Image (cartoon, rainbow, N blue to C red):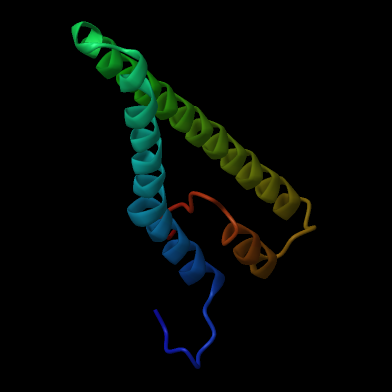
Length: 114
């Protein structure tokens, strides 16, 4: 990260926000969901059915993980479409290398340096 007096690039900002999301935001959301389930579900289920509580939380966690995976797959497909569009526009001499570099920085999942 740069000093407070120096501007931050889009790439640095994206990396910082990604790290913040993975390290702080997602765990905080998981804790909030777990706390709410812990507070509400056990009150309506007795000791004999404690396994049901665990199964419910496990089911919800699994569904959230599935949805997250689906979203990542869709975003990667969009990145591939964007790259193909850039390639076509470059071949038709609509975009130059500078334009391509700027557009590629906007990718959600940037590809390794070429």
